Image (tube, rainbow, N blue to C red; front, side, top):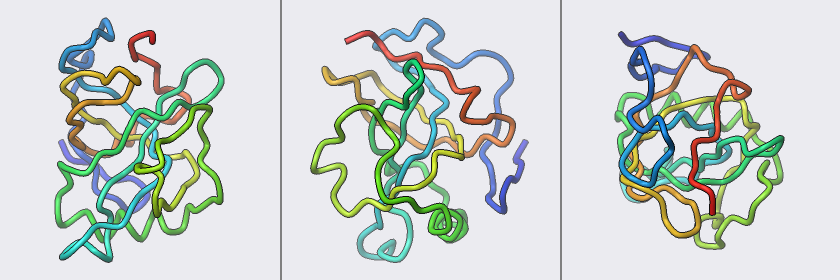
Length: 151
């Protein structure tokens, strides 16, 4: 079922547990908090090219990577407009974001939750091959849990 929150179309919300309940390093899905976005290139130059995402680790947010695939074209304009109005000056995370990932980022308040799928984790605890699955209307950032492997 598709739902909508804050004027943004949302992806389907699957009942039950994510695909990787034990947080192992294999493929899985994770609920994430959007902390920033980068403009796309070419046809997407005025829209989102990728989202920067984080998960809670203790009382702080921990950067876990960039997601640049899985977006529906019809969502991109609404996503971009919504995120432009949520700007902030600095990233809201406790760990360092690689320079290549942080280049030209528009940081946003950590208020929106989405879901990504991934193929595993890098040695630095970042998602491998993440794909955007959609927005989650029924979750707040405080409900997102840390399922990352210990580094």
